[in-house]
Amino acid sequence: MSFSSINFLFILLPVTLVLYYLVRSWKWRNLVLLAASLLFFAWGDFGHVPLLVGLVLLNYGIARWIGAYAARNQPKAAQRVMWLGVGLNILILWFSKYLGFSVGIFQQITGTQFEFIEPKRPLGISYFTFSSLSYLLDVYYGVEKAERNLLRFGNYIVMFPKLLQGPITRFGQVKAELQTAAFNYEEILDGVRRFIVGLAKKVIIADTIAAATKKILAVDMATIGADVAWFAVIAFTLQIYFDFSGYTDMAVGLGKMLGFRLPENFNYPYISRSITEFWRRWHMTLTAWFRTYLFIPLEFARKNVKHLRQQTNLFIVFLLTGLWHDASWNFIIWGGYFGIILVIEASGWGRKLKTLPRVLQHLYALLLIMVGWIFFRLINPADWGPFFGALVGAHGWSGVSNFRTLNIVFYVPLMIAAGFLSLPWLKQKVDALVERSTVGSILVDGLLLCLFALTVAYVLSNGYAAFMYGSF
Image 1 (cartoon, one colour):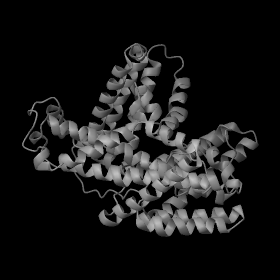
Image 2 (cartoon, one colour):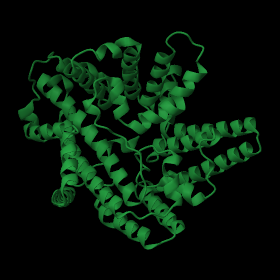
Image 3 (cartoon, rainbow, N blue to C red):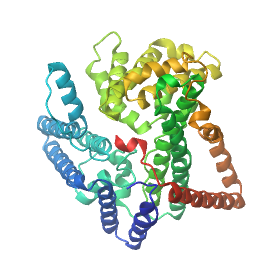
Image 4 (cartoon, rainbow, N blue to C red):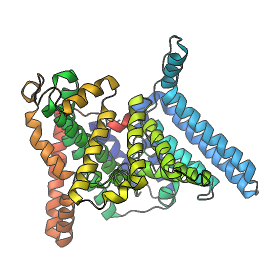
């Protein structure tokens, strides 16, 4: 089930909210939320409901086991159990997501060929696995105590606002709300506003621009010129941002409607002035997860390495970041691409970059970001050469497949508007208007209601598309 589907908007969400706030006991609210979350998952992936429930029970039990050894002051036993839990989670993730990729590599290396049916990938497996891993590690290191209430822990893992695409949330970020009943009218309204904005970003902007990107990338790369190639890069750069940040807006908004403060995942990444800054603004919860649970431990484990320790660790982290996205060479190369740039910036270029005019810093970052999205979007490496050739004019300014034959000119106004909306200035103006006067607040809410109606009409007429990061 998608947040932008009619079934979710007009059946599951309103029914869940009504039941959630009709009951007074926080125990019953947790039960309503858990039931709604399992139904939400089952609607899109019924076959993997037992796996999801099994992971909840596994990590609940492992964490209690770690906590029991820690309470008896048996750190080595607790460590063994922690590694058992981490190993089982990674094994399940590997089997669900990376088994086919691993078998393909094995066949290439050995020259063997045998029939292999890859298992169907569970929805959101990377997200709830990382939430589980962070919980086990936090319990082991004493950051959190093992949760005794299975209902509360189950909601931490399967809570539907964040289940399929994050934001990747640590237990401590929602623990208080899972134990305390709270009804804040202003927070609920703010959540509704945030949800509507995210829905419009996804449906009206991302899905519309996606149609243009799809048209271009469906043709032979050798038939496009520089004009269409650059159009495709800019279009996908906007599409992926509005798709994923739109989901995050909806997730955070839903969290507020239910009394939770989920972590932010985006902070206007395209205003960055370096790739280091970009990764502090893009998919922030994933970056924070790798920094906390991989990069910092690597720094401590390799503290005696005298040369290029930080650079090596950065590169390892970003190779794994690429692999986290999907079991495909293009994502590994995409991660390595950003890893190399981050290594260069960490080796001194970052300091020199800050001495350049700000406009050059922005252009530098934006150009490298857009080039990176080419590796992300073009899954077949055989397309990279012709596409990069088109970007630099190897096929001329305009090719056989052009704006007229592809019928993509009318997407330009929306892309210009999307470019402005990817900057923080509009939100700053709207926030200032709301804070200044009640009339301004009413006006903004009225416009949001109109935007919601327009978005629903769009879904009814065109259907809805899956979120891009939902497959990860």
